[in-house]
Image 1: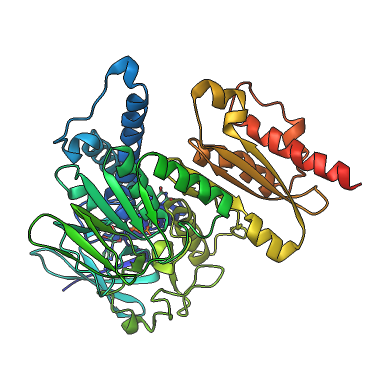
Image 2: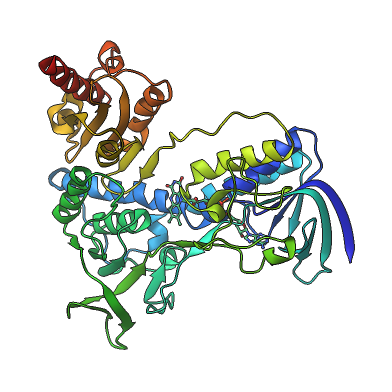
Amino acid sequence: MIESQYDLVVIGSGPAGQKAAIQAAKAGKSVALIEQTRELGGSCVHRGTIPSKTLKENALRVKNMRSNAELSHFQLREDVELATLIDRLNEVLAEHDSYMRRQLERNEITLIHGRAKFLSPNQLEVTKLQQEAECISAANIIIASGSHPRQPPNIHIDHEYIFDSDSILSMMYLPKSLTVLGGGVIASEYASIFQALGVKVTMIDRYPRPLGFLDDDLTDVFIQAFEQMGGTWVGNTVVEECHWNNVDSVETVCADGNIYKSEKLLCAAGRLANVKDLHIEQAGLALNDAGLISVDGQLRTSVPHIFAAGDVIGPPSLASASMEQGRRASCNALDISVGKMHSMIPTGIYSIPELSSVGLSETQARKTHGDVLVGKAKFDEIARGQISGVQNGMLKIVCDAQGEKVLGVMIVGEGATELVHVGQMALLHEADVDLFVDCIFNFPTLAEAYRVAALQIIGQRNAKR
Ligand SMILES: Cc1cc2nc3c(=O)[nH]c(=O)nc-3n(C[C@H](O)[C@H](O)[C@H](O)COP(=O)(O)OP(=O)(O)OC[C@H]3O[C@@H](n4cnc5c(N)ncnc54)[C@H](O)[C@@H]3O)c2cc1C
């Protein structure tokens, strides 16, 4: 067996692994990056973030053309191929792949194509396609092997009628109807995207409302917008099983006796860490109760020279957070000074309409701070919202009881995932809410909603004094 030796080896080329490898190489270390698939970039690039966001942009265009139907007489063809709706994706992916390869080359990172497994705490074996296995020793190892969709035991995902989030975009044609199981981020994104494309979507979840980590007034706007487009939200409902009826539809049988029929089904029931083939026990590691790899504040596992980053360590399970975790894991492994990772990571939900939040929700703030003051601005009350016809939008600021310190910002409405960064900066700098009033925003913009919401809080503060 070939044997090689590196300062640092990274398993996985997703956002976490990529940033980890680049950071170590920039510090002058010898680095190898192991990736089992032909393509680089992980779920983020190939099955998650980029493809779903590309589809979302096109769904929004379709929706807008429909709402301007009087001008354009627009109608989507009945037999439209999904590939048409994710146009240019292959170009985007190819470009991304070649950019990543150039970046690895430039930084003299050895890319090893194969599946890694631990032989011992410092040794990995990489199984390569039709080639001799390679044995790799490393002073430091970063596990960035990502995650895959969870398959509930009562649902048989056949990738023909019943899909998971990895396979949903491999559907050839847009179905007439789709059942979405789940009420999390991926479920909400795909449910609203397909509904905007004219598919009749039914979303079913055991909880009363989707996206339960957000405040009810935001998810109310989401449900309302989804139902206005023609979708159906079915909350408080447990799915017993679902199957293709061998004739014309997938039947979803619920505990309350209801049966929902649709042409296709998407099961979005969470994600599990990719550790199956890694043999982490041979490194002296074990999974925690949630099936994830536990790490400390430095992203170090229970074995001091092995670190883990990204989806394999669990929430927030975002590409944005994974990149920063990867970079930090590398710095910590190599004793490069890096400050504490802050908790102000925004959550972006690219549904139609978008949702985004940073800091504490109103519910969380009431639990931790008792009394709080809240200011809201509806997009249809703001000039830019009226001009652009942006409806179903709201920005909410949560402030401490004195009406001074900003505790959190939550937004629903198109543009939410961009707008949230204004709030993020205020939170990072522990700003007073007055900052949003002192700041002169461009007019007309949606960002002006910050000022309107902040003025509401200041009004409440003055009334209290
Ligand atoms: C539908 C969907 C939409 C999403 N949208 C967003 C979004 O809008 N914004 C956002 O921030 N995040 C989004 N995410 C989440 C984001 O994709 C993940 O958080 C991110 O990809 C995690 O990065 P990672 O590096 O941990 O793992 P991954 O991207 O999963 O990469 C892991 C890599 O490791 C490789 N690997 C695994 N095991 C081995 C092994 N034994 N040997 C060699 N290689 C191995 C895999 O092949 C893979 O390439 C979305 C996810 C999905 C599914």
